[in-house]
Length: 232
Image (tube, rainbow, N blue to C red; front, side):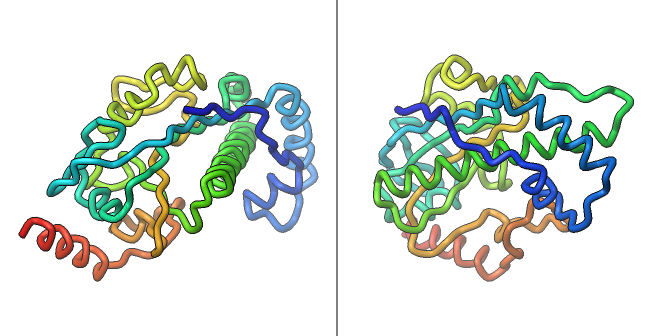
């Protein structure tokens, strides 16, 4: 297990506007962004923890990772030819999460949320690049509990159990409803793959701002067929 700290984050007004897809700067918004960044920069401290884990007992819709059973048809198929995976938890950090916008300032709350998103995204990108370089992974994909109906969010409990005290390690707490605090945190399993996979390809939910790939009904059929083949 390894914890990554001192993660570089490019916190500039230009980066925030780029994240918000705002081509023209409004002076009032620009002033608010600059003010928030001056508050955030001295304390920003994103963190990541990962484990080098091995996959065993692949059977039907389940498999073991680090000796812990996970149940997901898609995950099992994706890891059919994979022996080593990298469970992870990444967070923007409690320091920045504790900064709250003025209750009556909706724009400030919106901009602060965007800044936290940039910090989280930067930390995740740093982790991915670090793992790819350190372990010579080549192309990778990730899956996360709750990203698909096939792999429910309740399995956050199993994922967190791989690390033990995640809150003590990187400050991320799992609630009774399996959400993470700080809310700008992500968890999942990164794995090497020849064909890039996105959970969005199997999700029918429309108008999703987080969609990274179009829904692919043919891929859904292929996953079902692969499971049937492995069961025979």
